[in-house]
Each structure stands twice: as C-alpha cells, then as structure tokens.
Image (cartoon, rainbow, N blue to C red; front, side, top):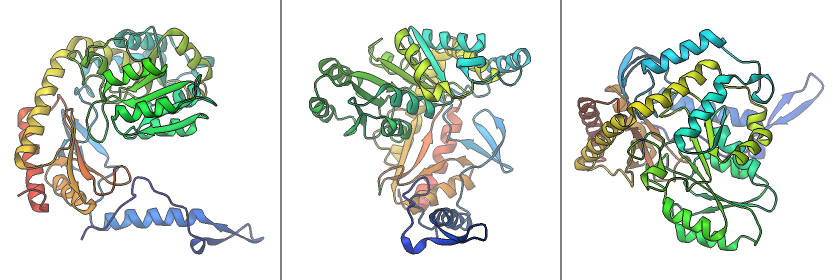
Amino acid sequence: MVKNVAGLHAQNTSAPPEALVELPRNGVGAIHDPFTWKIDAMWDRVSQIQEDESYYYFQPVEELDGPWVVTEGKRKLMFATYTYLGLINHPRIVAAAQAATEKYGTGTHGVRILGGTLDLHAKMERTIAEFVGREDAIVYSSGYVTNLATISTLVGRGDWVLSDKWNHASIVDGCVLARGEFKRYRHNDMDDLEKQLRRAPEGAGKLVVADAVFSMDGDIYNLPDAVDLCHRYGARLMVDEAHSLGVLGANGRGIEEHFDMPGCIDLKMGTLSKTIPGIGGYIAGDKRLINFLRHTARGFVFSAALPPAVTGAIIEAFHVLEDEGVERNEILSRNVRHFIGGLQAAGFDTGVTVTPIVPIMVGKEEIAIQMTKYCQDNGVFVLPVLPPAVQEGAARLRANVTAAHSPDDIDFALGVFIAAGREAGVIE
C-alpha cells in the first residue's frame, strides 16, 4: 500500500517541545536540538516511499535519444521535461558550448561586476534584449535567483508588491524577502487585483507580478486586463516568462506576442533552463532599470558569472529559436492538441491548461503515486505533484509535451496514461 507523503516537497517542520533531542556539547553539557527532529521526519517520509518502490525523484538520466532517456538502465519516454522545443541536444548549441570552452576555459575570474565578465556575457545580454524587444537585459545565475533578487531589490519600505496566488515559489520568496507590503490576489482575478491596487497608499511604489504561463496548471495570465489596471493605478508590471518563452506566440516570443501587445510589460523575466537549454534567468527592460539592477541586486552582484560553455550555448539557442522557432512552435502546438485531446477523450480531467504543461488531475496523493509507478514501470517518465505544492485534494501527474515528441510518441504515452488511470480507478 502506498504511504501518505503529504509535504514531501516542503512543509512546516517546527518540532514540538517533546520532540527536541538532547545532544552532547563537546562533553561540557547538552543542548536542545530541533534540527534532528526535522531531519529524521524527512528521512522517515522518504524511506516509506522507497520501501514501496514508488520513489522516482532524483532519477539519474544516463543517456539521451531525442525525447527518450535511459535512467537506471531503463528506457523511458520523457514527459517531465521543460525543454519545450526539444533543443536540449541541438547540434548547433552543443557545438557553441564546446567552442566557448575551447576559447575561454571552463570558468571565469569571479563575479560579473569585478573580473568575471567576458565579451561573451555582454553578447548574450544583447542577444536576449533584441529577441524580447527591449533596450537591455541582465542575466542572473538561475531563474530562482532572478525573481528573488529583482523583486527584493526593487520593492523597498513603503512600496507594495502584488502577486498572483498561483505564482511560482521564486516570486513568492522574492516578495517575502522584499521590505515592502506583500499582497496576494486571487488567481487571474482582475477584480481582486483592482481591489488590492485601490488599497495601496497614494505615492507608494506598486509592482504587480505574475507568471505568463502558470507552472502547475498550464493556463495563461490575463495580460490585457492586467496592463490596463497597471496603467490606471500607476503600477509597474513584471511577468515571468519561464514557461512561455518559445511556447506562446507564432514566433515563440512569449505572452506579448500571444496577445499582440508588444512592449507592454515593464520587467520581462525569463529563464534560460527550459526552452533555452542552459541555466540562468534574465530581466529585460529599459537601460536605466537594468543599470540599477546591475549595481544593486545582491543575487547578481555577489554571484559568480555563468561559465563560458553555458553562455555560448544560450547565445546560439536564441539564434536557433530565430531560425527554427516557427516550425518547432507549430509542431509543439500540434502535439499539445493531440495529447490533451486524447486524455480528455479517455475521461481525464486536465484542468484549465491550454499549453504544454498538462496536469492529469487525480485528487488523492496515493492515486497520484500509484499512477506514477505504473507509468514509470511501463516506459513513461512522469512525476506526481503533491500538496503543499498544490492544494489539498488537487494532487496530479504533471505531464509536459515537447516539439521533440513524435505522433507515435504521443500515442504511446496516451496508452500508458490511460492504462494507469484505469488501474487506479480514475477513469473507466
């Protein structure tokens, strides 16, 4: 029987007083240690799942074959990927990474503001700015750091930051770290956002933040109404394009292209580890904004520069997106329709998604883990999403479609998901 694993991803692990452990302190005395309780609680939770042979996190991928991977000696079709356009092993991008390593070595001389900036970094930021239609861009060491550092740097005492309730954890953490007033509005609810904006004191700086495509449910932010509200209430708008770059818009340029609203976002954030197969994150905007962040955002100032191989790969990935983005985007859209349509025809609830992020809603955690085990045992690499990452009763398998999947791949995956759903009693 599958054990309950609520809180595997994150939880409140504050120990009750009776759980504190007495530890020796260099032979001099003892201290109460709540850390042992937290560590042991997670150890026990993971061990329970492993005993059921249902633990599929941290599987090491050993080989790549298009959308197929080999992990622990088993060949599986990858449906837990963020490489939406299938660029992860593109020969041009791999060659660019190799060439950059040969020229610059494997690392840099440190942080960007001191000795760590290469001409390659400047070229990368110009390339990004041009692609997204902005004056300038700044690249951080990860997408998480990009949101954390940018929001906490921009929002100071007396300012307000307003975040959609379904925003990514990195946005939430940036809002928590900021010294201003943190408000959350109901998911994609523009009436609630307006209520919050009305409450902000006159003269306060106001920053509205949202994902372009929401990472757990695959729906799209209501950009037109959000832009209108920001204009009316004097707020700046920051949109996280992590899951929309390369996905939305005919040319893959994201949510502004999707809604035909070029230039409407004040701070365009994006990651370089999903459609772009590298690591890092960026903010694109006007030159004054980027200059401010380059000199004040602690997550940038005190983080080492991206390695040359990654930087070279990112530059070439944007060039590939320029050359092949339209064709790959069309294939991706076809695959999304194929996959979602097949799931819905079988009776699955796929929520509100209209993008490659496809939640297969099952409700109970035990069912999500049972279906995951069936899929993994039968050649589909997929993982469950459990509370508190989602609300109680909203457990699901999150399947991600890519342009690298062939129609036969999609049919194979559908067959496995349908068989898993029938075995678990989710569908008839």
